Length: 94
Image (tube, rainbow, N blue to C red):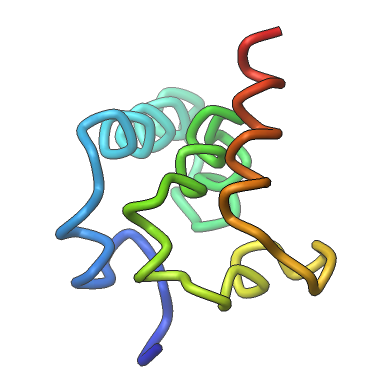
């Protein structure tokens, strides 16, 4: 994987859904409403659990692959995208 992964990464832009794009825009809007400076940390804090779990969708596997530790540095080193997707979907359903 080359370069940083983020909302401006060319591969992320190709596969991002309207759901994810809207959540990022809502985060930016909320920060501006509070008259604060937009930073990546503030955007990350504003994003919902649903946004983060959507990154486990299969379409992101090629982009992130085994590099999800870049997104979740405190996660366990053993990672299974399908398992994580199923677990996060159960949380969202309950």
